[in-house]
Image (cartoon, rainbow, N blue to C red; front, side, top):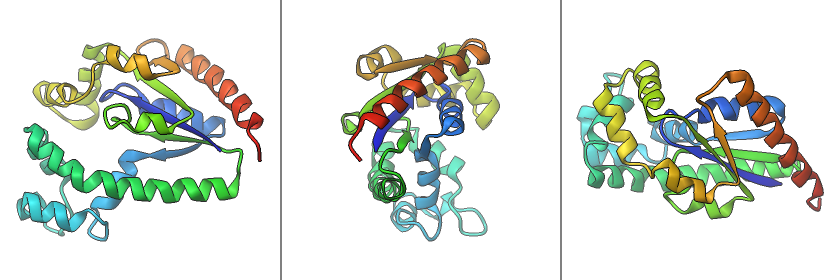
Length: 205
């Protein structure tokens, strides 16, 4: 099994690249989806997060309101670190289970883990290859405002909590610019996929 990390800053096009790689035949694990799962009332991180951040983060149905939680956590590096200390270990355990399931199904599978902070957490070193997405900061801001309904200040706060793109480039084998024409981005992704497929096929069964 070939393990590929897919990372990039907030609203930098990771989801689009992941979807294209999935279309081409990769197995994709989305850290955001795992993060949602562990914060469900049945999830591993639900109880400690509610205990730490208070019941004001809950919707009337008892579910965690992720926007309320994010507005609190991203306002302070200390609070964000506290939230991550609950969420990340739970996500990693769920991710490990998904990886094991994919490997059992196909020992030569290409498994792509899409996550925002693979480099910041040092987890990039666990992957065979790392793909980095990027675009101009103003495009990230516009995407964040449109996609997530955030203010410019809220988007900038998220970007400030992440490693700069130029620093991340040092760790990546592949860099995908998602700021240009979609067709050109797809061509680039297809070229990366062909390279990954060759690597996966060369691995012992």
